[in-house]
Length: 111
Picture 1 (spheres, rainbow, N blue to C red):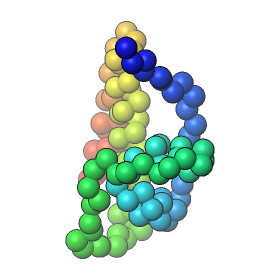
Picture 2: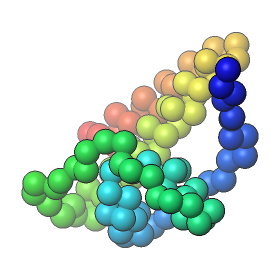
Picture 3: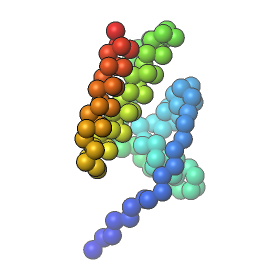
């Protein structure tokens, strides 16, 4: 019988957009967590789990577009956090109100 080992300690890293773009090329289709774990623990770097995406065309965003994309990304992150809370607790009214607030924010930004 095989025993499943769960990783219980989580660490968070923050990157600048330029740093992440550079790191993404180094990942080469690998998952960030397994790549970072291998590098930090001096273990063999795992094979990519999916094919490496190739960029067909590269378009530079204006500062306005980049700011809009960042704000929408933050909203998406908040939505994911709310979904996690909704799945693990019964605080449905509070989550619904937060979702309405995020929807209004997204509509303002997207307009």
